[in-house]
Image (cartoon, rainbow, N blue to C red; front, side):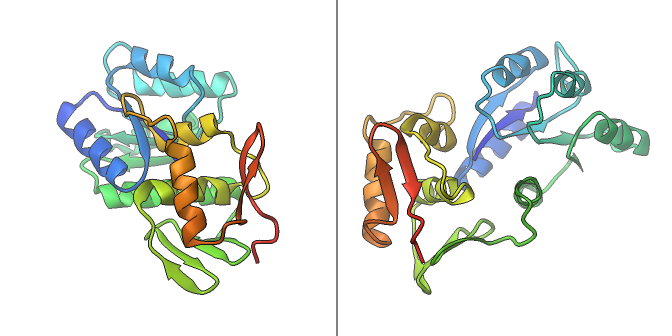
Length: 221
């Protein structure tokens, strides 16, 4: 999952970015409202972690503009503003969740996962596609009842496909899910990850649709 982190505090931003990347998220970090607007215009982010007290443009103004133009990208506010009136204003402006600083990164990640489940209409934390089961909280993967250990980006690629079973994701779409800005992408990185997954699961479970991309086989059971 690719996140946009909007945070002007250098220490908080760096710690959040590094921690989220370590746990398998692709993260792009910007430090003011103008950069946030430019990043949102790219349309590549699946969720926004938004501070309110930003240079150049306040986070609440950014959020209101997003909703006014029908941008439904999920937003979690991360802010030091802890008054009830501030919480009400943020949620009424269209935020999906509101977290007060100082925060524990594990809690933020849990809220991200919960929001993904709500948006997908799932109550259960685990994702199941045929004989494949993924636990987003622990990154535990089981295939036909057998636990499979996966490196971070192999897991992220498999999770991207499992979140949309039947959909075909192009190489570019998968790269957008796995990498943030300024992260080097090998020319055949996606193919390498797919090859590794096929060896650990089953060769035919991840299908290559020529000229289009990759999808999970319908008969993965």
